Image (cartoon, rainbow, N blue to C red; front, top):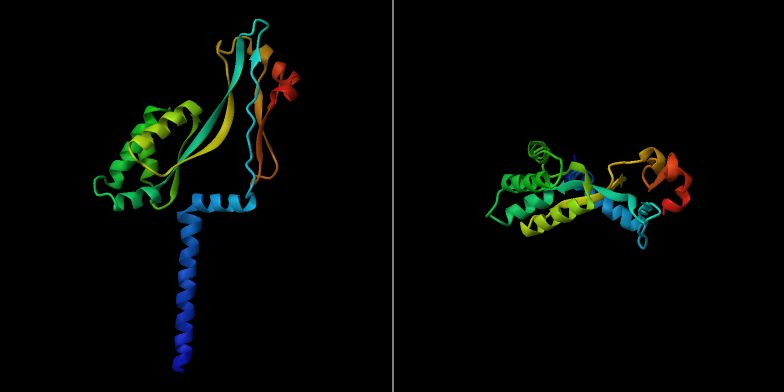
Length: 208
């Protein structure tokens, strides 16, 4: 076979292998960055706001029901591994242990469960850790991450839950809510809808 043809085939094979490796790295190992890039390109000047459902008060102005936003926590392990390569003071396992400690102390998630998730292979991918993290919990967790100089925390909106200062006293009268997602699964807008009681009667005024 002609040497030029052999060289051409070898060059094309090498190019294909490099391209496959590149696609694997951005789609599997760096999924969060890819997702963020796609969202920015699709909505360069838009930010979807999630309305907070309105509070309910009694005639004396005392709070009966309010809303609390909850978040899902993921960790970009690639960022942590890269940081550890440039910082010999801590190993990846030591950073994972710090992360598990911080989150377990500020949520219902167990430290052993978090460590198991963090050490799940492949370690160059992002990993889901827990959900139902309130805004107050998230604020503390972010502060602790910053204090320990740990990168890679990814917080995304999860859902809205109603909070009852009087332990759901009169909950049958107040009613309950349910999640309602509008649009396709890939581009949905999160809202809530009252199912019964005051939540349903005044849903239009409360839903935001």
